[in-house]
Length: 113
Length: 110
Image 1: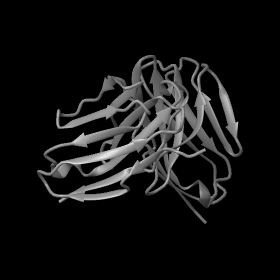
Image 2: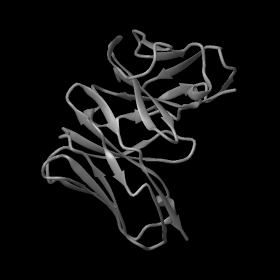
Image 3: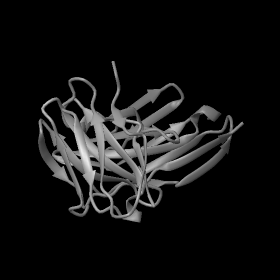
């Protein structure tokens, strides 16, 4: 079966711009979570969605937002980009909540210049 | 705030050596997950342990969940270059998001 698909893989943006990242979970998976990974902080939780509802939100500013569609696909948006937003953004899906493990996508590498 | 402390942060060993990576917390978790991540890719789930004291084996990898469900260890026997990567532990509790440790970067030299 197809894995978790994240697009685009790489992105270069300028400070002040906005960006939208996309995630298609494994077919049948209704839970989607987003993480930001940086060398210094590791994986930091951004959002969790289940059946189009945001179940949890991490400690990130309001510039970070997300949503989930009826087909379980998810998007996250970052507005007014800052240099510190440069990171690998990972999406993970699971059948229910991730107690038994997530399947991660390959990530979107965002570079803000 | 739940925290998972992983040690060591970095490990460089020769092929054939054994190693253990530790994952510790003051919090109790309903499950502990271990992932391996290679450069440019997302983490890949290796194992999930859910019962205190549980031991799971995956070829040369042995995973243990502490009796109190606050800590876990990963032991690799006779490490090979293919074991090189970033090893991450992650704890799950009820309705809270998965919490990740910062990882152990393992390098196995042939």
